[in-house]
Length: 102
Image (cartoon, rainbow, N blue to C red; front, side, top):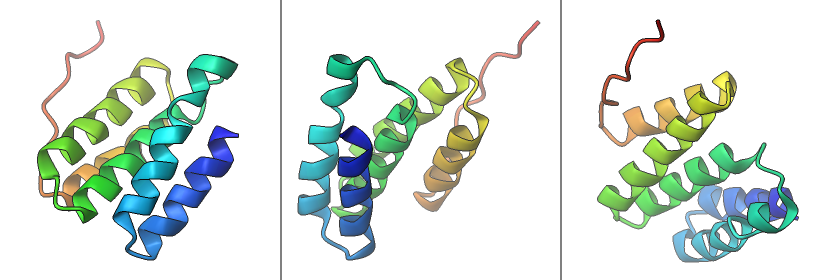
């Protein structure tokens, strides 16, 4: 279910419909706690960040994108991490350096 809502949010993003997309992605973000399925969570946060950027809410967009990067990095989801990093660069923000693994 959350994947479908995420796709709907992405369609709204492509159409420039920030509020509609945010409603869909915010609902999608409630599902992982119910289903215990977290594999799409970084992408949901990334899409939320893009929608917030579109709505002119840049501080919230940055926070959502950093959350996407954090979760993806912690769970070894390199492709999602890279997508979120690219979105963060489009926002004009440099990611803070993360601690190096020993």
